[in-house]
Image (cartoon, rainbow, N blue to C red):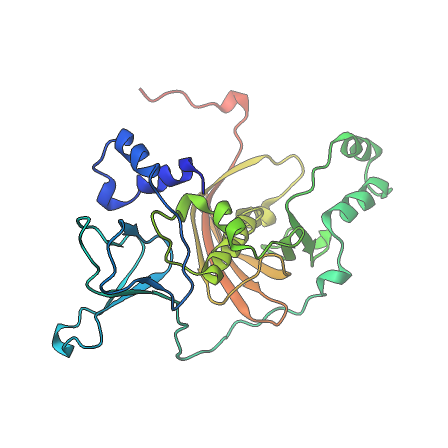
Length: 316
């Protein structure tokens, strides 16, 4: 973590938000970064206090020594932005602080959503192959093919393989497989860097590698989810020469199970309604085992693009 990242994180800590920027930068120069695995002691009872510890990721359990009376045991859990360890040079820790692993909640489970029967991604064309076919397909006008061939093709960072042919492009639905191109590293340090804007570590890190990796995968999936999402609400209305513009108003995601962004995921998008200049879409993502891993909804502003002569006059 570089100095700029530390400074930005410190500015988000409620304890320090009343300080001027110059003070935050000076504090950042004294920051030390450490990571603790589950079960590691972050601080032991009786040890000298050697600085202020602020938690960004994960949790830490605070517990009193075993000989403390049960009624007086200050057991509780520290979460993000919680802090401990402040005191004088002669202060010692009065409790034990231990890094925790997030425990999966056990409870009722069911899955009513069923993954549609679609071909596996290995049997489908990728976007590059679809483009090459269109450039050589005599059913497309020569002018279109020549124009498309001259345009520089830049592959997206997300690989997609569509389950439906062009004949279904007017249906209010879209099914396709997607995954991140290449293999995403499992190195927690790389993943922390990628999502540094929301996960900084100051003084000491109380966290665990698996959680950081999981959040990184979620960030990639969230990015991929919005590439074609709201446009599905326009499918029934597409026609030659139609120009539109859209703006996302609300995009919500629920991650039901762990997800890996570099493994194939089936994205099932449906648009049950479009009305009043707004399109509504729902989405479901399944892994290759048919498990529902993500649910999504989005509402977007969708309108015909105005021609230059239709520019509205100011109301004032």
